[in-house]
Image (cartoon, rainbow, N blue to C red):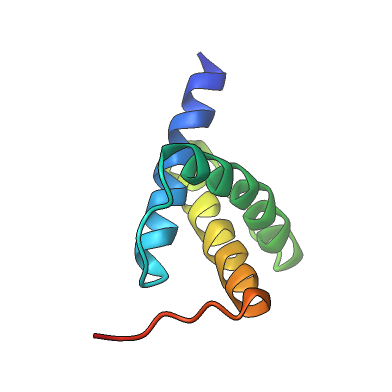
Length: 85
């Protein structure tokens, strides 16, 4: 059951990060991957700042923060810019 929650939180975090970064989701599988990697990135970044997140909501927020950081870095190096409407 923990693996299922991990995938659900990863999918939601990846989708939310895509929306926050003025884009769109990348599809369920890439959203899950972005969310899972974002969970590690967010956990690392928050630990560096001295914060800790507990519970499902804390994990989700940490994953979203990490996924946003991950997408920002990827877009920074890929040269992919989003034009405003």
